[in-house]
Each structure stands twice: as structure tokens, then as C-alpha cells.
Length: 389
Image (cartoon, rainbow, N blue to C red; front, side):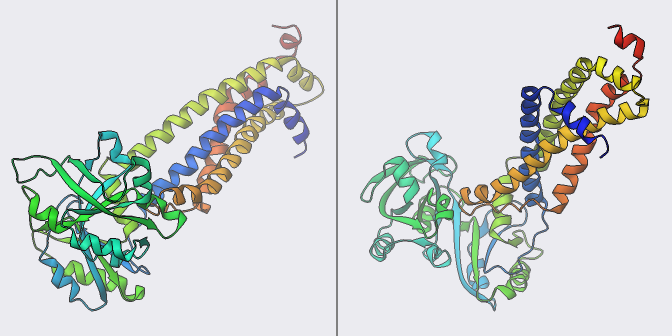
């Protein structure tokens, strides 16, 4: 701390350059904080403890179907309050890009019973139960695509053709528009839910199978025991199940896109490699500009080790300031990201482990980018520097 004022003055000698470099470091560690939360979410050990709703899917793959015959057996397990089931449809309305605005799921009649957070007027639910081709649409999707009650809409399926000539276009009658009970769950309104019996009777293959079961548990304290009992029903069969939380199920669905851990690691490696090049160039330029000043310091009695320490401290301080600001911003933004996912994701907050890794990276990168300029300053000959050589 004895020479902190010298380090601080040198760091902000060129304020504009320093501020832009700090912003680059901030952006890098903001990305690090967000991506580390993603990595932690995907690597978190699965646990069903304390939840009142489980998702039961195939142990082999999320796209592997399960027999509908499991329904009655799951319902008979002590602790199970209600069971629903669903099947991913994978189609789009009007044009492929709209698939992101409204994805479709075939669901059982009891689906809304296990999802009380979906609000649907009683008369619309009655109409849905009485209309074989009926569908209900989330309010967000309805507004985005201009859909209203009474519309008859075609959905182009990407997976399931119909029995009638292999056509992949399915037609639905919109009989209701549902809302999410809470603002933070508005993302769940980007759905079209239609009757599973209509889907099962009309598809060309896979009838009698479902994609996953949703199980409502009467006591969250018994959720792990219920999950184990459900999985025991199909142990050593050709349709073994895996019961997990909704968050774990959603993350497993995303994992179908690829190795998330590898993707996250590659992105972070590229970001930090670029950061080292950027800040290394900044420090090299800063030291070149101050060669006469370093020579003066040596003339005044500063040792080679002192000059080395001053330059390294400047580099480390630059990275630490930007890194701490970036991680702090990530900690603030993560709750907003969770809310924006509509309840589908629940990334963990920036914890002590992430901060510890981040601080080690900050110091390490600071030493790496400052080492060569610092060694140059340490080896500086006073006569050559003052002579401009």
C-alpha cells in the first residue's frame, strides 16, 4: 500500500484508454458470471427434495416415449395427488420462425389441475373439454400472432404426420386463452395446448405413448420417496423412467442441443484469450509511454524489484476493478434472467465459489498481461531511457 498512489496515478494517466479497457474487462467478467451460473445449473446434482411437482420421463432420452399404461400405476403410489401427461408436438403456425413465439404441447384433461398457475375461465375450459379439436393459447402467444378465440388455425407439424395421407398439417379450434398467474411466469404463455386424445387418434405413429408425466405430490417432504417409487415401477424394463424436478427436466431438454458444458467452456476460453490480448497491449503501450518516468524512479533509488512490482500491481489493479464490477453486475442481472425465462430456468446466484474463481482469474490475468511490460521496466537502463534509446 506504500506506493498505491503511484500505481493509481499511473493507471489513470490516460483516462479514456483506461475506462475503455475497464469496460472490456467488465464485459468479460459479466459474461463469466452469467455463464458460470449456467454451468452450475447444468452440473447441479439432481434432487427432488422439497418440491411438490415431479416430471417423469424416459431414463434413456427425453425424446424416448413412455407407455400410457404407466398412468394408473403411478396414480396408485402413496403420496401421489394428481397425475397428468403431455407430448411435445414440434410444429409452427404460418411460418417456421413463429415456432419460438408459440410452441405446441398435446396434454391430458388433467393438465391444468397440476398447473394451477395457468388461469383459464371456467366456460373456456368447459368448451375445451367439449371440442375434440379444441386448443387453448397463452395470452403472450395470442397477442404476438394475432390469434383470438373462435379462430381455426393450422399448425404445420415437424415430427408427427396425420393418418390421413401422411399430411403434417393439423387444424385446431381456439376455444380459450390462458394467462400465467404471476408476472415472472409470463414466458409460459408462449404455448398452445391441445387435447392429447385428438393427437393420439390422429397421428400416424406412436399411438398409446406419451412424452412425459407430471406428478403432483401431496407433501413436498415425501417427493424423493415418491420419485423413487415411480422409477421402481419400470426398473429393468425397456421403458425405465427418471423422475426429476421441472427445472432439471427443462435443463435436460436444452441439453439435447449439445454439450452445454463444452460450449460454455469454449466461450469463456475465447473471451479470456481475447481479454489477455487486449489488456496486454494496453499495458505494453502504457509502459512504453512511461519509460522516462521509470528511469527517473530508478534514479531516485527505486530498485528493479520495486519497478517490477509497480507495473504488475497496475496490471492486476486494472483487471480486479473491472472484474469485480462485472461479477457484481452479473449478480444483479441473474434474477432478471430467471424472471425473463418465465419460470423455466432457475439459475443459481453468484456464490462464494464463483467469486473465488473470478478473483483468482483476475489476479492471474493481471500477472500474465503485466509480466512482460514489468520485466522490461525492471531491466531498463537509466542512461538508455533518459537518452531516448
